[in-house]
Structures are given as structure tokens and as C-alpha cells.
Length: 255
Image (tube, rainbow, N blue to C red):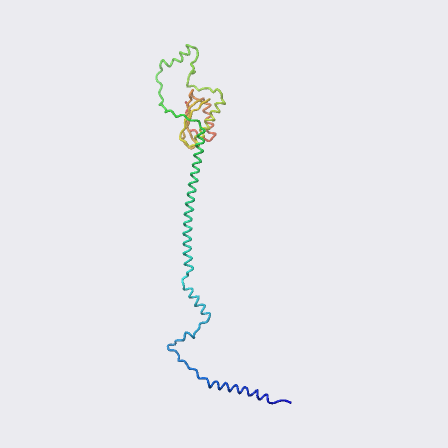
């Protein structure tokens, strides 16, 4: 059997709900209508900006503020630049001091080398002052004495005839060695940058030599033999040896 009472109760519920809603509307008081603001002013509390507009306003505010990081960076760069300038000045001073010290060391070394080379040279005798050449006077009877002595005794005097004549070499090898020693001493003199030098040679040459610096690797020689004028062969050998060593001879005087 079917029960027919259930559909009626289901239709009664919506009616009861609708009635309750109408009663609730009647019981609630009417809302108070707010008067509009004068001058077209709007309530700021009720107006809210969208999120996109808020981000744009924040970006504009940051752009208007002074860049504190940029100012601090410029000051820092200025300090760094000053520090670099000070360091450059310090390095320049250190480089100058090092260069001066190096120059002093080189000068001291050159001086030591020159002193060592000069220590090897024989001790030179002081140069005698040059006397003015005297003109020969008229022949006197005393000038004939050597000839009379030769004719009377039949033997030449101990000094030989003609004291100013060139002395013949007794041993060519010894004279060559003596000339080479003289050239070495002249070369050391040129390296020492001294203006003049006088030395006394013994042995085969047996002469007094005066060396004078006249230019860059250029000298003049004055050789005075104590037993007469040096032979022409020795003078030519000295000139050739000087040229072979790259030294120029401006003048060569032999007496």
C-alpha cells in the first residue's frame, strides 16, 4: 500500500520558510541613509587604490628620494683615488732612491777598478819643468875638444861620437817587449780618464815618457831617451801598436 501523506508535508516547508523570511524583514529597522558630503569630497577611508597603482606610487617615491648609495659610493671612490695617488708618489720616491743607490754603486765600482788598474802601473817620476830651447851659439874652440881627443889618443870618447845619434838595438825581442809594455800602460791610462801621465822606463828603452790626453781615445806622446833618441823602428812600432788597439796618436815627439 502507498502512503499519500508525505508530499503534502514537503510542500508545506517552503511556505513556512518564506513566511519566516518575510517576518524577519519586517522586524529589522530601516538603514539610515547618510547625507552626501558637500563639495564633492569623497571619504578617503572608503576609497582603496588597486594593487598595481600602489606599486607605481611606491616606485615614483623611491625615484624622487636622493640616491644615498650613489653618494656613499662617490665618496668612497674619492678616498680610494687619494690613496692611489699617495701610493704612486711613494713608489716614485722609492724608485728614485733605488736609482740613486744604483748609480752610487756603479760609480764606486768604476772607481775601484780604476784604482786597481793604476796600482799595477809603475810609479811615475815627477815631470821636470820644460826649459825653453836655447839657440846654438857660435862655434867655440871647446867644441873641437872631442875631435882633438880622438886624434890624439886614437880611441873615441866613452860616450861615443855624436851623443844625439840613435842607439842601435842590442836585442830586438827585448825592445819589442818593452814597447808592448809601454802600450799597455798607455791603454790603462786612457781607461782611467786621467789628463796626463809621466813615467820612467828602464831596460831596453831607457827613456822618460810623457802622455797627455787630447781627445776621446786620443793621446800625444813625448819620449825623451836618456841615452839618446830612440830608433825610428821603435817609434814606428809604438805608433802601429797604438793604432791596433784603437788608440789615436795626435803627436809623437822624440828627443
